[in-house]
Image (cartoon, helix red, strand yellow):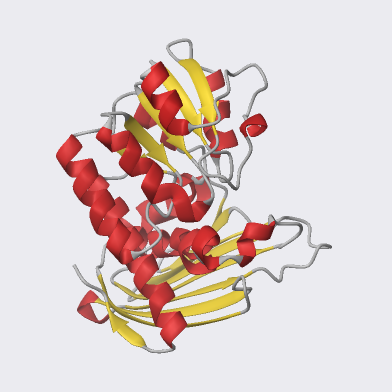
Length: 311
């Protein structure tokens, strides 16, 4: 399998590490995903470098592209790959606007390419196994979910302050928490009320109405202090009719009719490996749906209002 890299701004290093363990893959090239990136930022200096990703796609004719440009340019790179019949493993969100999302979805479906997005945190061991517990009824019928993404801001590229390039903190960071809520509950989103502050958005809060009366919220911030022991603090709390489950500090805390448990989870499947093996670890329908929810939440925050989430 011939694989190329387009951009190196998100989780492409994680994808590269996966490829390094496989004898069935040849990395045929790297190119920046926009004029805001440099061709010398390949994940490995030995990879052939191109100034233009379209030139690389045409010259190398890869089987698969790992797409991770400046976040606001992801959709246009996917469109270029789909037009050439190249499979895509893409950074999320897979589009920068609801209008672009329609174009990307149409192109992916009509081209018939294999397509997956980097929703890596669904497969983080604690979240992966906790979701299974909830879906299997460990806390009864889910009623309320609250999810958190708190990060250190540190030193970020200047383009984080440009909405057209960055895309926004809700779709870039918050989409992980939106994914957890959807995956844990199995419920569709109906509406969202949201707000955010800063440029880039340093904090955001989203409140969701979901089907069957389920309530959910997401809080996101870049205010985690430099003195904190970890870069991020990811959490979810799920309240059900028969118990409560929490994920924090990479552990699962469950209390139900069987008492209280602290669970150190076992390993979980690796997202990109499953995709390389021909499986679809997260469905294409889910990828586009989660993107739509995240982009609608960003719009609700921009407008300081409540918006319905279209199916």
